[in-house]
Length: 446
Image (cartoon, rainbow, N blue to C red; front, side):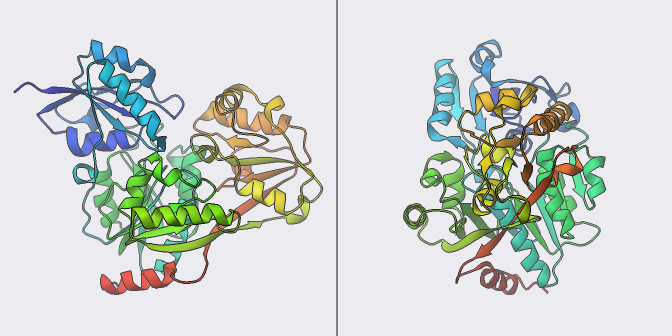
C-alpha cells in the first residue's frame, strides 16, 4: 500500500504531540514536513531523529507556514493536518483553502486519536482563549487538592522552543530548574507559580513519556493536572474537564479553534473576570455555554487583583507590561496590569511604541490592536534584551509588571516598579471546593 505523504501544520506543540501519538509508528503515513507559525524563530529546525522514531532516521524538517503551497507540491503531500490553537475559524479554513488549492486534503485530528490515558485521576484545565485565566484556575484547583493532603503533579501544555531532544521530558521542582532547562519568559510564567506552591510540574515534547514520569514521580502522585495552553484541548483523557471562559471577549468561545471543542467536552465551565466585565457580556457567555453544553456546571469567578506597592501608582505616568501571548495571539487589549493602573488612579498609561527596539518594534507593528501596553516577549535572549532596553528607554514614573513572574529577576529595570498578582475567586455556589470534594470522594482519594 502506498503511504500517504503528510505535512503537519503547527506551532511547536500540538503538532509534535499529534505526530508522536498518531503518526510516529504508523506505517500508513510518511510525515514529510512540519510547518511553523505563531511563535518567533521556531522554523528552520528539524524534529530530531531521537524523537521521530525508527521510521524517520534523519528526523523531519520544520519550515515556515508561509511556504505551505510550495511544500505541498515539492514534497507531493497528500494531506495537511492542522495542529495549533487559538485560531479564528475563518483563519483555520483559510489555511484549509490553501491546502486544497495546492491539491492536498485538509484534516483536524480529534481526542480519540490524540488523548492519552493515565492510571491516575486527571483533571484538565483548558480555556476558550489565551488569557482567559486558565493558569490562576489551575493554581486554585491545585491548592484545594493539596488541602485534602493529596500529592498533585501538574503537566503543562508544551512550549518547546529550544533543543527538542533535550526537552523530551522536563521536570521542575525548584526555581533553579528553570535556569537549568534554559526556560523562556513564557515558560517561566507558567512553571514558576506551580513550583512556588510546592508542587511538581512536567513539560516537554513527548507527552506519553511525560505522563508515565508524572505518574511515577519520586515525590509521589495522587492526581494529575493538565494545565492547558492557548485554547487547546487536553492531551490526556480527563476524569474532570474544566474550561475557563472570558467575558471580555464574548462570543469567542464559539468562534475560535479549538476553544469550542474544549467548551463542548467540559464538565465545568468557569466564567472568569465577572468583576471587570459588563453584565451584558457575561450574559452572552453564559447563554452560549447553556446552548453549547447544557450539562456543564457553570461557576462564576472574579480575577482578584493585588498589587505589591499600590501607593506607587496613583497620579503617576506608568508603563504597563503585560503577559505577551495574552496580548498578541490572545488579542486582548487589557490585562491585570491595566486593570490595576485604572483602579488605583494612574495619571497616564505611557505609550511604549516610541521607545521600542528590535523585536518588540516588530511585535507592536504586527499586533496593531495593542495600545499603550508592552507585551513581555521573552522567547529567547534577543527578545529579553529588547524588552529590557525598551523598558529602560521608556519615559515613565513607574513600571507595572502584570506578568505571572517577577521580570526584575530576569532583566534589569532601572526605574521604580511594582508587581500585580491575580488569583481566581469564585462567587457563590457552585464553586470549585464543592466540585473537588465530590471528585476526591468519587475516586476514593485519601
